[in-house]
Amino acid sequence: MPKIERIELHHIDLPLVHPFETSFGREVTRPCILVSVHAAGLTGWGECVAGDGPWYASETIGTAWHVLADYLIPALLGQEIDEPADVVARFARVRGHAMARAALENAVWDLLAQARRVPLADMIGGRQERVPVGVSVGIEPRLEILLDRVAQYVDEGYGRVKLKIKPGWDVDVVRAVREQWPDLPLQVDANSAYSLADTPLLQALDPFNLLLIEQPLHHDDIVDHARLQAQLRTPLCLDESIHSPEHARWALDIAACRVINVKVGRVGGLTAALRIHDLCAERGVPVWCGGMLETNVGRAANVALAALPNFTLPGDISASARYYHRDIAEPDFVLNDGSTLTVPTGVGLGVQVIAERLAAVRLRRSVRACS
Ligand code: NPG
Image 1 (cartoon, protein in one colour):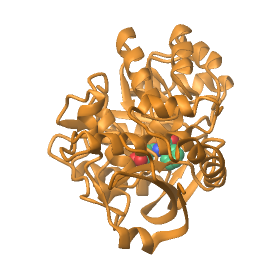
Image 2: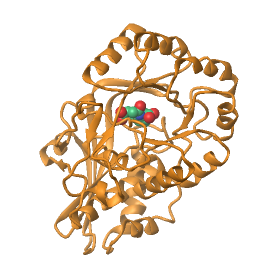
Image 3: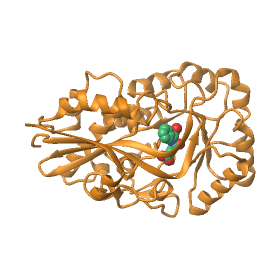
Image 4: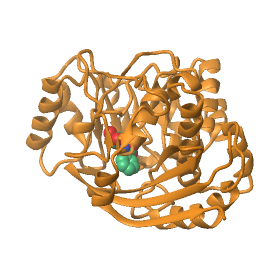
């Protein structure tokens, strides 16, 4: 592969179709950084999922921009990159900043897949042509509004629903949804809103036949989750606490969870996500692909990842129309019968960024080229 000639950062902000509320806050628009890597007439794209503030994770758009511009881009610009492993090696000195690293590493994966004329899913060993997906339903001001929202998504064909929970919006909400949809595959996500003292409350979720309870305790914990899992019938799933393949191994070694949510951004890129997939497959632990309200760029990478064989639970990868009226990349992902999305068959990510759409929502741009 000829050398990397240019790398651009695009800070954008897209209005969401519906505001999205979790235990850590409410989002009305979704800001993100898109990274483009240019070499040999090709352009690879990656999405950085850090948000405006350090609410879900410690990274923000500001920290990601800084680390990309000052450390990661200089480590790649002008280099000849033949394998994603070359990128991982060049970033090895950087501690943390997983979302920043993932964005640039993923852009290189897209670039290399295009250069090899293969879809990204093929390059990483994805086998499924369609991947099972669900929808994540945020916290609403009133229960009736939530029930309407769930009904709308079920009518649209979503076969698995995730409810966001927090203290005061948990057992009663799950009971109400269960009463209306007794057989719907259902799971909940607390985004670290509880502590071990809430064990009886979390045990009260056991009778509702949930697929899993996601990240109830502290965002960096695995030890208390192991204590909690021993007292629950429902599988725990870790999200925020799993920052790397090492964290996944530590969590599985102490039985802190029975399922892992894999997010490419949270674990620092596709290479790390693949290692977590393989580790979990060896241990007989199912994984699923989490979502961060991505544009079609990040969504395409998620769909490719979810095509791997151990992604057996439906992902938080809904159709494009659930998020944005007009995405910055085409084509949109559309929900198939059976609550699946189709894995793109075009080379690389299989989606095209539309320059005018990108420019229309761009707040800031940086262009770095080698001299
Ligand atoms: O469908 O992309 C989606 C959203 C899925 O609930 C979802 N994501 O905590 O997992 C989460 C949550 C999230 C969204 C986290 C945005 C951080 C930012």
